[in-house]
Structures are given as C-alpha cells and as structure tokens.
Image (cartoon, rainbow, N blue to C red):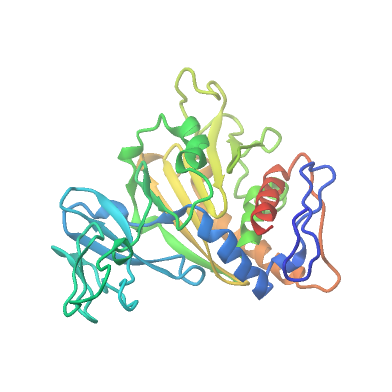
Length: 367
C-alpha cells in the first residue's frame, strides 16, 4: 500500500474500481505533494517538445525549458552536421551557466562565461587555460544528451523515463498509425494556451471520466452517442471512443482496423501523466497539461491539420466551447477539494474507468 511521505497516511487506490477510493484531497494543491509529483512523476515520464520539427538545417539550435513552473529544466535542441536532431542539457559542465541563450545557426556551442566549447552533438571540444588538470577532459565534461523520440510530427523527451517510448506510444500507433501522420501540419492560428486555477491532476481527472459529459457538455457535444461511449485502458495510456450519433462526421477506417465499421468520430487518447492526443477526421488536437504551481495549470491546445475542410464537422468542431465548460467545473472542483469536510470519493465502475486508471498510476509513482 503506497504511503503518503508527508504524513504517513496511505494512498490506497485499490486496483478493483468497485472497492477503490479516489486520491486524497491533499494531493490536489499541497505544496509538499506538488514537489513530490515534480520529482517522482514528471522527471520519469515522457514530455512533449514543441517546435522541434522546425529545426531542419545543420547548425540550427534552439534553447527551451522543459515544463516551466514545474521541472524548469534548461535544455536545447541542436541539428548536427550529421543531420541528427539532439536534445541536450543547456547547462555548461564547467560552472553551470547557460550555453545557448538564443535561437540561431552555429557551427559549435560555446559558453560565453568562460569559453568552454562543445560540438553540436554535445561533446566537449576545448577549454581555455585548463593546462595541468588531471583526468581532463572526461565524459562528465560533455553536455548530457536526453532521448529525443519522434512520432509523426510530434517530438518527446524525458529526463529519466520509467517506461520505453515505444511501449508508451503503442496504443496510439495501433489505433491511428494508419493515418498519414507526416502530412499533419501545425496550425498556429487555431492553437492557444489556457491557464486554469486548478491542480494539473484535477484537469486530467475531468478529461478521463465520462460521467460529466451529459451534464457539462450536453449542448456542445450533442452529436456524441453517450450510451455507446467507452474507455479502454493500457499500461501507460487509455483511450476514450467517441461515437457519432447518426454516424455523421466519422472516420473511414481501413479494413483490418480493430474498430472497422464502427461510427467513430473521435479517438481521445490520454498518455500518463499529462498528455492528450485527440484525433478527429480533420486532424489532431494535442493537449499538453503543464503544472505551473500547486493549484495552477497551463493547458496548451495545439492543432495539427490533415483536412481543413472538415474543421466545422463533428465532435471536434467547437473545442474552445468544450474547454470553457471544462475549465469552469475543474476550477469549481479545486475550490471544493480545499474543504476541511472533503477527503475522498468513489468511482463509477461504468463511467470513471479512465480516472481510476490514472489514480492507480499516480499512486504507484508517488509511492
């Protein structure tokens, strides 16, 4: 039974949803719990890297921060002369200054603090006035390299991943890998960030449960067949199947597909801990849930379009309205879980399978 390091109270999310209680309310907003989640969850999981597909020419480098407000890890992308795109630490191995402070095209990387020089692959090259230093240079003088994985137009990295990338992304590949993923094009005009006064896990809870759909999205998702709606779980992900009422605005699934012949209008994937990949006939809406404080979250909605002519059809036609409805209820939950009179709830075995799955994984990582 996982224990809560803050006060020794068990976080006992039973594997049987019929017996399980939800996570204790202190998980949602307690600063010590937030620090624990940062170190035990976000350092060990795959995280989205935006804009990596734009670095095409050798020598193109771009610094970025991994999960600002949470991990705050300084990293950089660098396209080497060998054509490989790498994700490197952006912290000089001499005294910790940032190596790259702006995007550009460079033949090598040089720290402006003391002149330490690295190749575009992160390998140490030279350092002025270091004559006589024993055992120098060594492997520790190179910039650490992080894994950088690509799936379609999307890139991901991790500090110390607890699961292989191929295993993490496998359910998505199985269901939608048949799509021409390399033809997806990022659309900045319909991409935007939302900031919510709520804990990141509350946002995920809401996304993962089916229960609220007729109550919160009765009008905005009126084309959704709620009776047919279902969730399927995998080791590191789950999938909600959005069926269209009347069969309009659906995918034309290939022969041999696990769901061939079904009127599917949306595949809603959640990947542990904080990524949603929502596939519609028009393309892909990526939701990156970024913790920026114990009760503050930034959600990036990123649009990748396959067929712009279908943007006004089906379940993915009015995502902004759906988001506004979700934000209101999630903010309400954040205010509620602070109550001294509330601690834990129960799960609907029919409608909260995804949320229960999330809670079991989160409890495991926090143990």
